Image 1 (cartoon, rainbow, N blue to C red):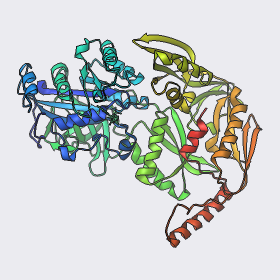
Image 2 (image 1 turned 90 degrees about the vertical axis):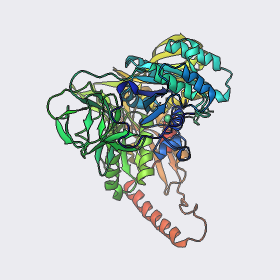
Image 3 (image 1 turned 180 degrees about the vertical axis):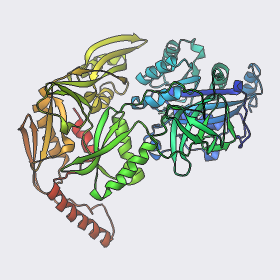
Length: 620
Ligand code: GDP
Ligand code: MG
């Protein structure tokens, strides 16, 4: 294993460009990107072994706990080729074209889920190469294909690697074949590695240096592409940048090319992965620039930092479009301001998430939030709870419809605003690509009985079938994910892209508890599903809300009439039951709170539904 000293401030300024390699790791979720990144940090001595924790770059608690990367994480590493401490490494180094050289490797670890493909696309424009990682026990999956195609479109050099070989999966050779076929390389060029044990990782790193081209200088004045940002209370917005031409120096005046905003660079430097300040950032490098800007509307990801006068903007990014909408209300009305601050803070580091004030007669003041997908929504609400200690009452995730009423088209994002008397309506559609081992094709196609696929085509890819179809986005955000996994025993996977909206016959379904509409449960559904959905909803609610605090009628209403009804009985909820020991005052407090809550419930009809309840209600 090579030993290098982590760079000190000022140490690696003016690195010649030919010694820089910028690359990212792309893969389907769980195929081992973050774990491989851990090994790379270790091998390069970027993070000391004793400071190492698993999935080091997943800095959010939630990322570690759920084991998924939500945000991309750039890191700069030094790698000294030829100082290997074992003979085989020395031997292979001696055959290498540039022996005993020091390289700067800028790695960007990316998230794998389709909801975050926007993050991946941004990372791809900041690098020259990509390691395409495939879990040998799982084989190629839908996101492998989607990421591969994006990397190819971005013109990157792609290095194929099969991971988790320490598990000695019987299908290893077939997976190697598939990766070779996909990337278009001979099978002996596919790396066989274990991110867990480190086997093959040094060789992979060497291939990155050998195959990924060094960055090149772009013509024109200095320009830094902002591919991500982070909010810091003291330094303001910190832009993560890739320098495409020229150099930037701390303290000098620069300009945001698109926003037209001038600023003085407060600080700049490398991410190792913590911020390490330096005097300059040179062409080809990846690093950070602290802008001092506090207003997130002024600094947009995709903007270019250029000279104070002159210069031009680099091609930016398509702005992310939220497609899933959820009304989020504070559990306690008094938490409204805290919720607002929390949402604002989350948005500072996640530009793809939107929110605006929303008012409901029953639930009070809240926010209508837009997300990139259902996973994105779940993550934000979990972060609210985790990082800000805020419980929320959330509506069903819904999608935006184009509705024509009295000759005018308008967009309806909130189901409660969906009119009963529309003339025409269009719903968002996704282009869906499912990748399944051939043996599960029948099961995958059987999903047609539950989900509205239209225009199915199939293609062979080795032992896999690629099923391409269109599906209403509303169906995708219900439990498509779980159903696909369950019919294919976890082997099939999907990726999606938004497609053209299509006409649909839809109606509004409302759920009433104690004769009051629960706005969060209002949904827009297909007319032909109304009776079935109405009945199912009240029955499920009856099961899911066994401990309501007073007798209530549960009803479903569609096209102006009640289509299903159930009753739930009164039952005292033992809120203090989980507290052991004799903490009487604590219990008293809880009981008092419960009494107050009961008052409130009666007054407002508010029913707090946890995300789990929604998840259950959403199931087909
Ligand atoms: P990511 O979603 O692609 O970032 O994947 P992670 O790095 O979070 O890894 C997903 C899971 O696979 C974790 O439980 C890892 O411990 C495990 N894993 C990753 N690499 C290896 C490997 O080489 N061998 C084994 N046995 N497990 C691995
Ligand atoms: Mg990860």
